[in-house]
Length: 538
Image (cartoon, rainbow, N blue to C red; front, side):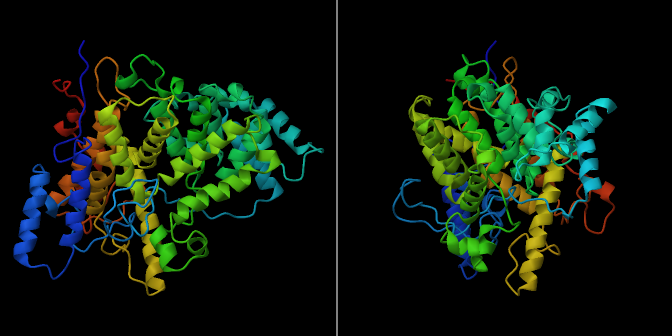
């Protein structure tokens, strides 16, 4: 049966090595169009140029999703784009100078952390064991074991000890058995895991890909590290990115049809472990503000990292300090060359989440893939794919089912508005889309999906590196993306001014009943069928 190809909906870019440059050109045109005193005839001419670059653009090309509105800066990008004359990529100066960039979905969910009493801690352990489907007798035995550990080191975490003692139960957890599904119920599992979502998912991912046995990982140190990382209030997003990396590396892709288990059998074991670890730490100790804010307020982190990839460098450094503690150093069995490769792979994939390098990485990828197939024995090739997987995983909410997409949209907006509130308190200019009184969600989501997510999905799909159904050729990620994008397009076309979504994940329309303007989950449209196309002619 001939393999059928999926594609993104009309109006999204289908990238070759040339078209990724068109995407950059359109962004530069948008930058010029943002000039307030631009003569009308020049503005009109530039819009026509933009339409020639992408004639499928809706609403007259540059006036809609495919470019940002005039005088608008994306909150995940900070300042607008400036271009340099040299064309170097990551090895030198970036041709795109986004002064400050922070990933839009990398912002954490805030919680009110209160000091726990001994009773609270015991009840917390019971809640965790309840989530593991243990019997009452097993629960009491496990809690007593932890309570009676008298020879534990002072810095040993009781919760990680508890998780360690129930590792076999975790591996058989009914919900974790769904980790290989794109629809994994991340929020429901977070509620049932009692704050141990990241360490439990990391264990399942490492176990399923045989990494625990390959490197003879000490489970005490493994759980110590990942539980220390998940003490961060950003654990749900970190777990979601880890899940996306796991999914993208464990499913069949057409480009390597001989590898039935996907990239798991193509990446080296060190690279795979590094990718999963990078996913877990990529937003560690995130302050809930983007790079632009930290630089503008002269935050100590911005000063320390010289305004360059401030958050991304901090995530790596803060997590690595935790890893280097003896009780957390689960990679102790790596030899010197493996350790260097592991550290380099983690650093580079986390830094790739800085959107300052978005087009650089895309052009590097599309240029290389247009000439030859990636060779996994080539460390440069495997790292480039690792960067692409990490980037897509970091923005994967756009390609999740509508119910999950809605929840992530709500959480993103909550963080944006909190930053906008602080900017107002500090008498700073409120960043675009961060003013809770005027933010147009459809404009924000549509622009981000078309500018950032669409090129990323297309580049990987055209290279046949996205998971598809081996029999039908359908791509679940593209179908979900099509449905979600269709909803935001419809909202913009209908001039719907949207405000913060309510707790249910349904987007509420200002001044109207929520039922009058449902979220993407209620959309039934043929656009979703665009994830099922015949293979392109050779």
